[in-house]
Length: 165
Image (spheres, rainbow, N blue to C red):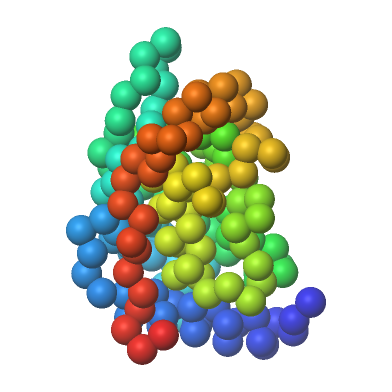
């Protein structure tokens, strides 16, 4: 567990790294309402990359998904929470029905936030190396995953890195 002072420093450094992300066709972000550059604890991240959704019995690709990423009080000991705020919930083994993503094994406290943002994008793109069907939040998505894994990923997985990081 880190001190509150170190946590605040880490959060400000994470924000600086996010500011250094170059323009990308597949990703954009802004601070969430109520956050400031002095207290950047929540982000709205828009992924313009296909993800699979299921509407009734029909599967289709969704072109854009926006998530809210919240840094918890015990960040970085615990991962940011991620929830869909615009678009339908992905039909993915690592997304609960209420729109929250199960971070599973894609977070470690030494990881930069921008790297976690990229990992979430890879989950949305169905990168088979990032999804974790062994710890499924949406168990009924496992048969689809197993049947279609050779088609993955559905979207790009080449997310940008911040300049200088």
